[in-house]
Length: 258
Ligand SMILES: NC(=O)c1ccc[n+]([C@@H]2O[C@H](COP(=O)([O-])OP(=O)(O)OC[C@H]3O[C@@H](n4cnc5c(N)ncnc54)[C@H](OP(=O)(O)O)[C@@H]3O)[C@@H](O)[C@H]2O)c1
Image 1 (spheres, rainbow, N blue to C red):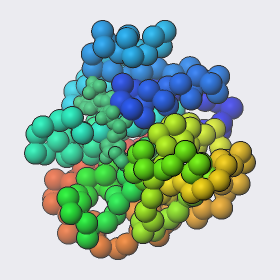
Image 2 (cartoon, rainbow, N blue to C red):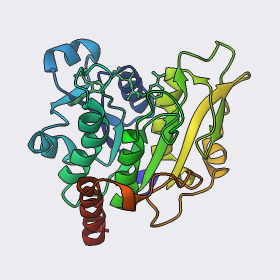
Image 3 (tube, rainbow, N blue to C red):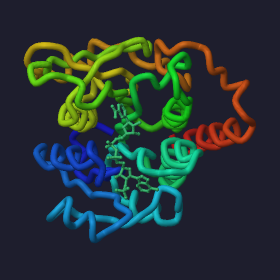
């Protein structure tokens, strides 16, 4: 889908710290954001005047209505407030799985926020769930951009120069508004298509040429479920059978609808 066709944007995680900013960024760009929320009353307070759709990422039936008619999706959900030990599997990964299932043949453009360290296995607390969610999106065959932001609030006020890196080795902070803006800009910029990158900021002013910023990046290999420079240390063949089946099911949807 080319940028001219994007009007209706479903924001998932819209009540979250990045999602709220993504809704505002979409409005600034003249798009029509629709916020996927669990609690309508709370969302009305957080997002006054914004169109809301009530759904839960763990309830595929509720997602059918939420995704209906969306030209693009911005996925910023996260399991941070969820006390379940397997919340990342259910929300970070399962949320993307259920959204893709709910699309039912529709082919919106997708901007997925995951995380810096998504491919790191050598840091305490690292889990592969974000990486697995990225794999689902790549396997879906949908037009996508995957943004792996650095540490929220760890960039100083003067650190506004965006640094887009690939390969999973980068480290650093980034302001929340810049994450949201990058996600929305990726929907509107053709050079962002099919790319995966880490996003941090360094001293200096923010660049304005988004086509150039995204254009300097390598594209993910067509047909690969990993980002272009990702380490090859999580082979699909060694993944649990359920995950392989889910990945194949999403890939076969792409064959049917692509
Ligand atoms: N902190 C960092 O430095 C850092 C760096 C890189 C990446 N990240 C990643 O960024 C994410 C956090 O972003 P954030 O601060 O915007 O998150 P947040 O403020 O915790 O918001 C999470 C959003 O996900 C929604 N959500 C959770 N479960 C849901 C469900 N079952 N159905 C529908 N929506 C659901 C929440 O809805 P409710 O409002 O209804 O709960 C909320 O809108 C995390 O995944 C984290 O790994 C964080």
